[in-house]
Image 1 (spheres, rainbow, N blue to C red):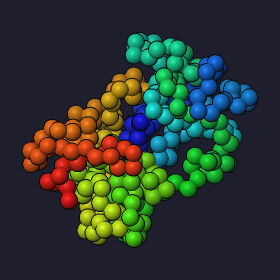
Image 2: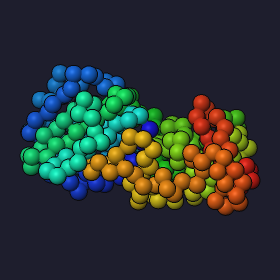
Image 3: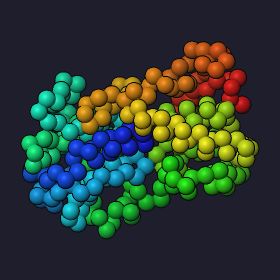
Length: 277
């Protein structure tokens, strides 16, 4: 599932290519996504200009010069590509092009999603913060609000695994399975540790590692294992820099101990049994 770095990378590219463009027409596929498009979806944005692209947690927000925004979640297999003359669409089965925005420069924004777990939702701008998807989210992990004092307070007395805590979107917004594993490896903390038993010093290492890992992933356009592509149709390059995720049985880059995989919160959790305590 695309996480914060993938969505932020997508946002940064689209800021350069799509902001300022006007929606000329909208095509909605027959098969619904997680949410069906409302009856006023097309009429509310046709003729509107894209003025801003923002992000909250794993959600991309397309803002127009009217009363509405479009909230996009890529689900398990979604991609939002900006297609223009010369765009290579060979990796995208047109049967899974579920939503298409035609723009005033003859380019197209196309939402493709083979598994249809994603979402493209029209929301009134004034109601955005109170939508079911965004209300109750914790602070952004790249913000000043996410710091050692904050996380230590949230971890105090918790029996939940520390990995589950930092993946809880109510605690911190946007961290998923891949990057939680990488953050905890860099911090030297096992994913199975009870959050309440992680020391204040270790909490500091976790919050210090978080922006380092996320910014490195953003700089490499995120991680692609199967289907994720950025708006240009290109895969993320961060997979080559993963230290533990997906490396079960392979030697740790630091100490050569084989990487282990344990299920935490129904998710595969990779760690080094020697480097992480």
